[in-house]
Image: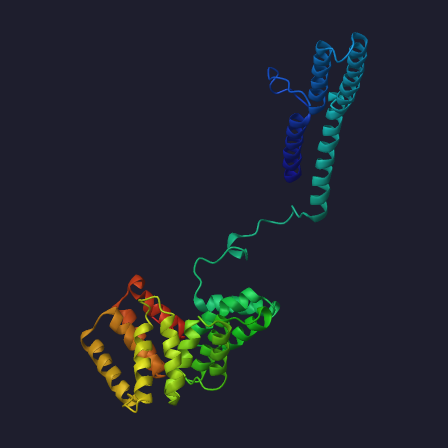
Length: 356
């Protein structure tokens, strides 16, 4: 009963305010009266009649008749306006509107509301996010939503990179296929799918990943990631003519200072050496240099750029687990995320997990 009493009082106050605001009370009685467009037009015609009379264009009788017609028109106009703005009529309409508003408010709440239910505890409300949510919790919640709404494009788009970060490459590939099926392919989406499939195959880009990189490159000739993978795979397969063309095209896209430029220049040099019959560094030689860098960094530390180069080299060699180990060591050495921006982006793009 207390609830309904309060609801009645609040509704009555609201209706009274509505009636007061719309009942036609004069707010500024001293304000200048502004003529309506119709009255202003009639006054302008009256001036023209007087002007024509003064210039001799109209006779006195004609001018008097014209003024009489204008006076009658003005009287009809004022009568119409007075009827439309009659205070009694307006107050009646506002009163009816206030009553209808109150009846609708109580009627709708009486049909849909439940004042007998206790207030829901804040902790049990689903629209309030928990104070702390782990990545696993967030993934579980999104997965539950996707089971109910399998065509939720936003859900699949959000969960795909999360799967990559967790090392769930097959799940990431499935999510990316859903995104492409729902919203169509783009160069980024095809490359992301190719990366997920490649990582699921321990870094092997042959087959579908390579086809996806080629499709992405054809879709957007300025797409760096897909062209980088195509150039790397051509170099690995010994197709040095194709590799040279790919590396050169990739370097033309550089604006200077990109992290991939050094690797692209090294790839171009290797392709040219292969075409000229020179010695092309094999994986064993490269692996030896990488191992030397790894030993030095683990023994005496190094710059964040050197750690980033080590992680990238491990990924290029397909040594995903060693790349993860190097990434973990780099995170321990550089706790501040602001110092690891490039490294964290590299790790996220290649499915390495921030495990500490």
